[in-house]
Length: 347
Image (cartoon, rainbow, N blue to C red; front, top):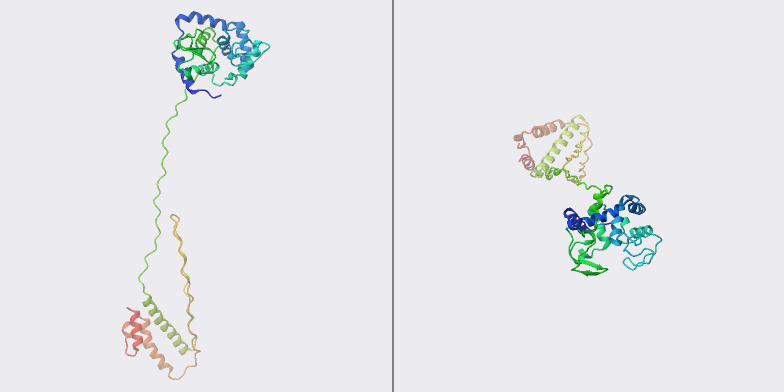
């Protein structure tokens, strides 16, 4: 059952400061002796066992019996009405019961604030239960502590409900309050015990979590700068190289009646691998251009007279191109177009 936090704070504060008024100490002690008397205690223990499955809360039944019925065993602890009649005070309409014990068990289990379900059995918690048993009108409407708890102590204030819902601001409650009775009974009967409130252990300060190391920002992959275009030079060199290659092959076939060498395809370049961190963006491969097939070479014919002189002339002009001897490229035997193509190759 949830407990009223404001009332709990109030009862904690008041219990720590309250004392039984010296002028009423004898009266309070006499009440305490009646309540702890063995014959009365045995009855209260029987009720406690039936309600909470332990006889140890008998003192609660005794204090409520005194406040509601001045310990009269012919009256119910619910509101002080005779238990063998239907009650006319709050809670109204209950009874009749066959005996005092049956009426008490009904009041503690079936009537608000349902003490059978109470969970806080510390002294401040029990003092809250006493207040709720009588009603919280003092705190709610008049902003003073209830004499139901604090009568006959240094905490009591003037004002009293003289009947149900009837308030008088000039009347002092002359009944002994629950706190005063509890103090007297604890002094008379050491069996009345309460759980020790143990302060919660202070947790050792925990070190602030170490921040995860910051990773360097990912390096943006960049491609090497595109070299200056040599398309014109490479094309001219390729054309002229092809002339040399096929010319020498044709010369070799002419001299030795053998077929020209086959054109070897260059090996495909291997694909590069990117680094693991950060990933290198995938670059789409350039489209493969189908090679331009060279025109078929004429079928070699048998060597004839005059071929040797022709071969010598070809060698004289082609050999310097292979050996990169630029001066011979500009021989008077080269045509103007040949000079222009050769000069373009070596620009």
